[in-house]
Length: 238
Image (cartoon, rainbow, N blue to C red; front, side, top):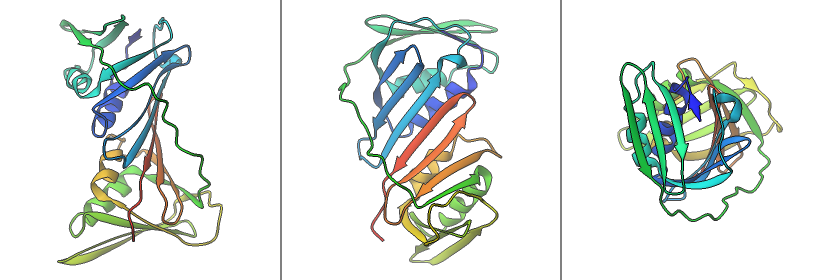
């Protein structure tokens, strides 16, 4: 397997490692994928890197247990112009970085439960497409006063609120792309740190899709180049 454009995979691993320390990576004809839930069971991650993202892709279908924390350390060593080659055996994942210098890392495979993780299909009442820069700034503002945020969606607007012992914050994000399934107001509460970590690797002007339902987990979707990332973030009691 060879990737000339390493940056998207690198950022994907950064995003995954914020929640997942170890997981099974599935290699098959469709490409590379991962489904995992963090130890606190607050965030479910669904990652896919399709075969077309690779410049060369030949692998026997397999499930490989990988220490995501260690993989993240390797990906931090990638240089901007590196080409990455991966080779998978029964016992290890070999990662070669070729650029101004050539380096090879061998990461031992680990045993990870192969139980398939699936999130039940939900019907959401609101779907909003939002600029990542706007969302990140609003969450930074909310962090001045609280460790959680309340999201309210109504008529194409997203209201973000936070409250703490020293004060409170309110923000309104207007003119969002809306595909709402209901005219009713949607309100739910989430961990600010988890939410911020989910979107931290997104591009400055990138679009992020939020799927919301009152007092329910939120689905967050975005792409990093060819890579697709979906997160389900558990809600908190209002």
